[in-house]
Image 1: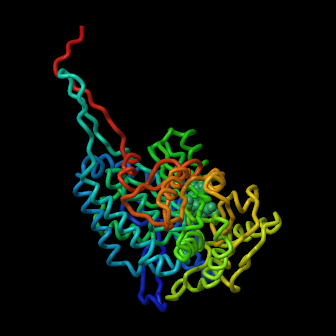
Image 2: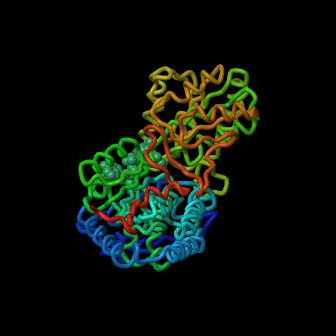
Image 3: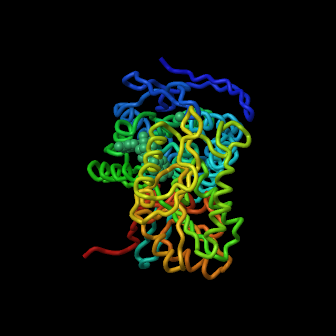
Length: 502
Ligand code: NAD
Ligand code: MN
């Protein structure tokens, strides 16, 4: 029986009703999973069940791949011109704009992100901007003519790959959905996507909007379910020719292994980080404090780019710490729908326990809790903004990604000292430098091993700017024209204009 999710929002920031089918979306239809089982969707603010969705199985992944292959060969792919693909993507973006409050509220309910983030901040608007950007690129995919000799005509085509598997996390569900589908569709591929089992609602709602926008059946398929069943079926599927993944390094490794063991599909990975945020003596202190707070605590610390290692130069260390402490103490924690909330709940009980486990390990290893370190309130998965001091480089809280509201503040001497410490990590996703000295800003930015470096700001992104990681933070780049390379195969065509074979 198809499940219809119905919910009446009556919150300080949004009042309205939503109602939609929460089945798998395969070949343009909403269907039950082949085993008929379901997954409960949880509201992290109170730990209660919101609704249930269909649980997909490897068999459903096969059905989705059948539909995606057929669409690729018949209605989509090279049969559907780029300008028209762009029009469809723009239609989808317009429908999202029409439903912006609803999408934001759904995300706040399912993910716990404050409504102001999910609606106007990173999530819904970020997703719309991304889809519009790639809509504009859809008719600008072209190869080159390469001069060889006058007897030959040689050119390249950038062809779509075919069926793409996409596996996304729960921290920014809609943005992650957009970053994945938009470049895939702009280049003419078809998609089988699995959202996180913790935040499936907006991805399912997007299927309704994609259908309304007029995407042909089979172009977008969403199979909700668990990682070790649906996710693993996608990454090891013989007819999926590329997989794009965002999530943990542990699972990223499994995806690459599954690709290697099956059909050697192309793999792009966006994994975690332990990003350094460096504050020099001459920084604008107030700005540095504000951006640092945002950099580490935004979205409950559940950001792959979180500036979780804050390095502060000796001369301003005491004053920075004093102001950073005040700023962190002033964070308003609570109901994601309340207008003044900055920090909502962590996504799940599992993540809550994992973060508290890291806090315990920091204490046991001898680091000092400066503020926080405890649960906030008595229901839901809230954790106080936490600052650790007196850490050592080999502690787990210094080396590993915590993905929660936990920062460590470390004193440093000079540029050489801080660059060495900043790069002493297996990750390389992001970094930031605060200084008024333009030469120091640029030379330090160039020495940091990271895919994004911010100077005098943090977490700023744009759909036309590439994003991705050095080292174990990932493989490939998303967004910008760079993303298109990962969604096309380059074909070289050699035409004989007059050469004779002896
Ligand atoms: P995860 O890596 O387990 O989940 C991400 C996605 O992968 C989900 O859709 C999940 O269902 C799927 N998945 C899980 N196992 C799989 C498998 N064997 N094969 C294919 N797909 C699989 O992340 P998580 O457990 O939800 O979070 C754990 C940690 O991951 C966090 O604490 C954080 O450090 C990191 N994380 C990073 C990001 C990021 O943006 N880079 C996002 C979420 C989580
Ligand atoms: Mn949820």
